[in-house]
Image (cartoon, rainbow, N blue to C red; front, side, top):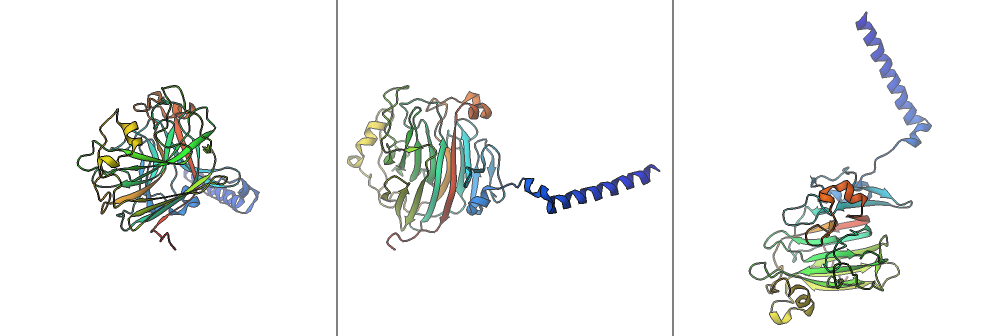
Length: 340
């Protein structure tokens, strides 16, 4: 008897489930059903990337992948955005003290072959804690070219930085030399796009510089294009209400191969820390590189003295100790001739 009763209940349950499913598919309930939207639904190039999240999670298959609190989709009422969020302290890569929720390009290339990366984004948050007289405080890197051999330096890092209490922040880009000899004398030369460059900082730990007059606010949309064509890097930055800025930098012939060529900016920023070295004459010629994009948080408990709540990610998110960047459009692929 028990056996027949179990069969009857099972059949009844199956019919009930089927009927519910039909209701959801054909009835009014379908409007209330939650559909998960993945970052790969918004920016379809995710098959070309792997990702490292701020909690140390590494994933190399990003189609239909998301992770709450780190890599997911938000809608601002009009547009879907891919969110990259990372704390001041978490688990990061072997070569960095800074956490990231950042894409790494699977394809690799040398500057002579080149490639092209674009992004349209808005920075929603940078760390609100840190020392004002440390150049990397209150900043996040939103796009990179990274070397995958030699010193593994970075020919390009695109920054957004905003001091606490300021309405406007700065967008700037850094070029890190491919140091001649060992890497002890490495340095970054910084160029302002809107607002300040990397070298502008407060006079002491708690005093900010003046707010930049032509800066970019949190939540303000801007775009960048990085086009490495036949060894030359062409950069274009655009934002509504701001002048379009373009820059050109060779990745195969150094501007900094002698002591006399070292810019004053570098002497001012680095002289107290190390003796600035020179770059090899051929710069990154023949060296394997790849693109990165997302949120590479520059705040940490060590160099910037930012609050980390002993690595408690939930507390960091609650108290402003994180970086958050939203992208609505991005592309990656071969370079294009800038003269066409």
